Length: 431
Image (cartoon, helix red, strand yellow):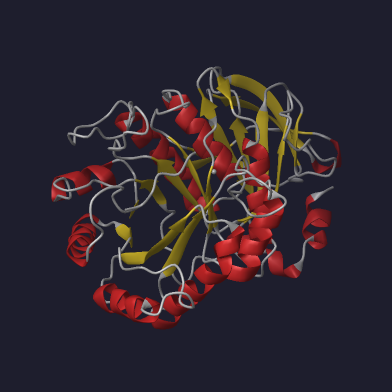
């Protein structure tokens, strides 16, 4: 069984200043799916592993199925999941109860890995193998050898390990220490150096009862830094909150949208929700899930479907683009990054925004603006260092680009008005 995570200058000058290797380094290749991965913790358990339930998953805009959080992770169940994915255009990350967490300390570990791979490697819908959730740094060496063996036997599949958020304990004197590292950045860096993961993933649950948890933006910034420090950059995913439980409140559609759009603004290559299926875990009272325990849509099913649709519209262009910088404007969060002087975008009007610049294929520069206010919309002004180039904006509802009306200013800057809904996002481009 998978345990529950607790809770994750002018244009020419700008381009010349970039490292030669930065453009196009986030190409979709190898194990990465062709479509931006949107997934979840806790897939449907038995007896709900059915074609109807998997169609509902696909209809809600999900592209990758994660294992159930209950029941036995058997080969029979996994083959059923893989078969249903083939019928619904989904991919699967499978969990198997035989999976070892070490080869050195498990005499049967190598044989278990070999048997697992032999059981599933021929499935075209298999995206990867689930290995561990929230390991401490003291287990990275063991996980690295299991991951390496999985890759040796099945090099075209990913190995999925999900890490702690930055609010996990880093106190080495505590019993136990969660991170087993002095700092969160040290924890991430050791993971990247030792495990050399296919994807850097963590969970961060922002919406507490009565308040918002600090550290959301610094967690994204830490993940962005660690992932981009490798050559080529390692894709990173964030697992965000959906289901109400314990100290976490019932989410609105705009709170879901906030999590998704802010994650995209840091250059994430995947998004996951905790959870899809309402868990059967007596540790907490669970409610307001995407999918109820009886298999019917929960209060968040339609909202998450709409948010996922917007994510796909944006990710179609950002998935293979490389994020260059991310910063905040307006009322600065304690862990935010102020607007730099030489950015390609300047927010000259009001609003609490997160802004990001990306470099994509065919010479396109992308600018993403995401409203951090999930209660109210905003009208603001921006300046884009596009010279005399035509600037286009993406219409999220249709997925079509349209040329915007802008006013040329000095130094190659064009000013434009932007209107964003609560937690909404807007994407611009030029080349």
